[in-house]
Image 1 (spheres, rainbow, N blue to C red):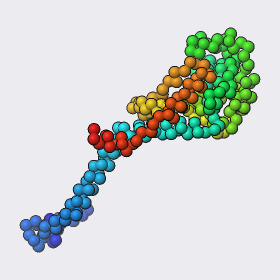
Image 2 (image 1 turned 90 degrees about the vertical axis):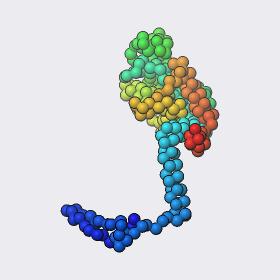
Image 3 (image 1 turned 180 degrees about the vertical axis):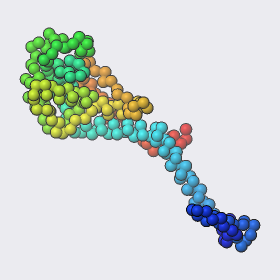
Image 4 (image 1 turned 45 degrees about the horizontal axis):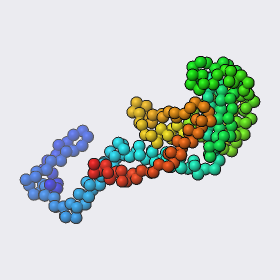
Length: 255
């Protein structure tokens, strides 16, 4: 019904409530029926809203993870097209306030740029030796961190640096620089964490942490070998086909 003239009013402190009599043509009249075109427009609007709800549901359940996987693939492809980057890895005396006992750096083609044991200022604990098998005897005649430092600086100069679990290795490098009162290493071309991209590519989502689960490198705990393992993961991601997100959505609709 369409209101014409109220038959009464209820006054309140905030507004006036008008009353209409649907049985009186002077008070209310039937609304004009919608045309065929209007009904079709309403139906299309409902279909559009339904499709938007379905797309949102697909995105939350599937789409965002496939989109993230595509981003990881594209990132890997971009790295392989770059001309100046290196992969770095270290083995250490432990996890916290640890020192480097081995460092490895390779270039984009997998060629070794730097591979050296490093003699720390402290003894390597047995639990660390059990992981990487680098003993105190093995590093007894190795160069110290200050001695190998210039080679690290040269290897990283004007290069983007890729590291599997970058937060760990960069914190260890920073600690060793401070320990020996050396300038902090600069990553002028940037430093990227391959572990984050690979974990995004694998897509194992943790609801508890609200992020992707870290994936182990499964390397040999030898610095250069782990660099090569990191390069292999980048190559695996880069070789993967991108997911057709629209096809994925259509498949979701017809499941």
